[in-house]
Image (cartoon, rainbow, N blue to C red; front, top):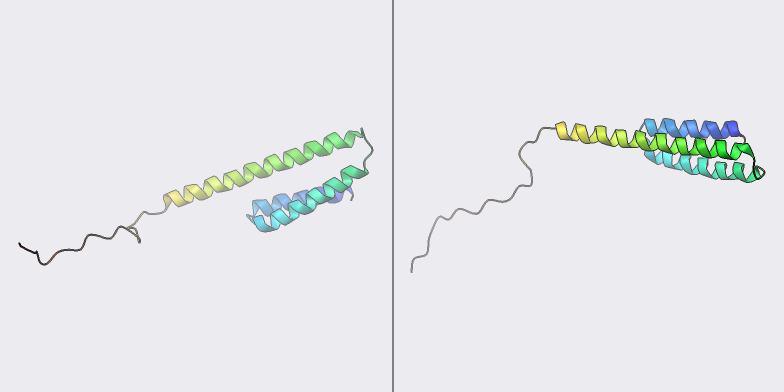
Length: 103
């Protein structure tokens, strides 16, 4: 796999994450990892591209992780702003007694 194709897969992965299409992003990430391993296996030991590609991989994961965390924080903030009306499943009040046993 050419490094340009690998970069294209990484860009597609980031785009899918940015759009919140996490299922597709996971499949794309699996393809990226498989292709990265294949590319790294073809490089000779000590090749300077190994370190560069490792750095790119780490930066990709870091950016993606931050993006997902930001998205989760925004979703939590939106949920917190929702009006808190009466609960649908609140505790059932005790039944009112209309009679009393004496004795």
